[in-house]
Length: 225
Image (tube, rainbow, N blue to C red; front, side):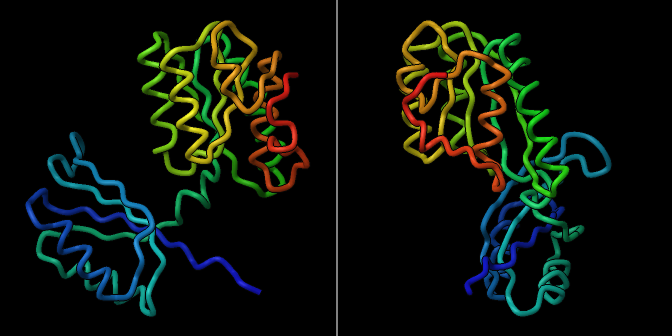
């Protein structure tokens, strides 16, 4: 029976100089590890101000301990620590975008339902951001397909359409289902599912993400509740 390959994570703190990323990835490749995810940023506060942080999730090669030692031996690297990958800690992500009051109600349903599943050992997290304006919302919706572990999007508002609807289509093309509240505008026509009750929309979103729930958005796609 096939099993998923082990997924590991590490955080590397290094000097912010040219060639650092090249040196680090060369060592990782030399150990036969396969990089699955990379996040890089510069510290703007704290003891590492001005230095770079590189968070990597990867499939390890035959010797993880030696990989860490060889990374620490790079002149520009200051610290290397191993961690559990984000998927093991925060799990799948439910993303909620829209107006403040509606977002809060969708989040209420999603958080309560996620709590029920997480008590049983799952890992489902809920991320929200209240926004206004067609362009602002369209940019946020488009960004969902680039968010690590984003599993479903809920659009909560009173009116959405135009560029937001086009962004919804792109998110769905990326394989992320979209639930929309019943609202004015064209977004409901582009969503996988339309739900009138915002609390129920949050519950549906978590149930779809859950590996233990029986709800599957693919079986009710195009319907309105």
